[in-house]
Length: 285
Ligand SMILES: [Zn+2]
Image (cartoon, rainbow, N blue to C red; front, side, top):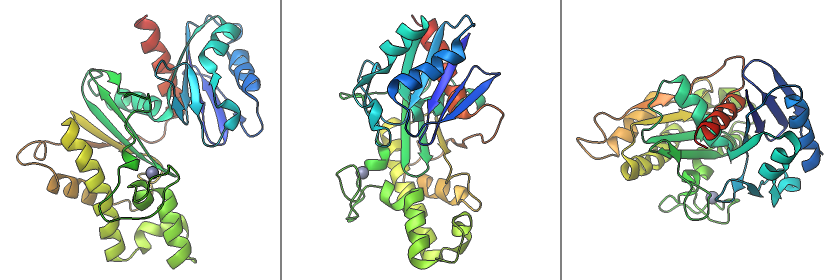
């Protein structure tokens, strides 16, 4: 049996594909997080546990280097702690990677292909799979496509850079726009409220960001997801049109595959992806 855990901004979710458990995460210590996962596993023959982490990991995927919203976990070797507490093997990944493992599986994509995932939520998360493996890079942080700077843009970003794509396409950007120009509009209605120029600027910023990554990777498929991409009126078709406009002809432009992340289901995608991560990791031992 494989168990998946998703450490989110507000909740810790644990599941095995059938049962789920969820607990508020605010105030939990690292030991309490381990204890909650251990309690879920108790009494079951668990081979491996996968965990999605909302932050950066060391290159070996054992130690949490930095989670912006959960400082209690910074510098913590969660993999060692889980293995000691449960006797199962533990596999950690960035939460975007876990989400993408679930999406690629649900969409029936070739697990050994080159896949690009773009997830627009509060920020802009991204992941890249090359030959079936998530790309991690020199520092283990992986591709942070949301922090690619846009030409001529100066908006400061929490990452220490400025002009990052994230500052022009994320949920935080939409919320700032709403508060500044449309204070009487619900955020859920923002895409139907923005001016034509604002919508054009938005799709352009998102499309050039995706197009840059497509040019580097020539991916088998791009998965576009996250809370913002699931919002009413999200200009999915226009974003794809512009990505194709901004990429080389004939290829990768002409046969580019962009798929919307599957939404819904009984098992949260982050938990499902983390359980699949555990299964993949265990089978590759
Ligand atoms: Zn940034």
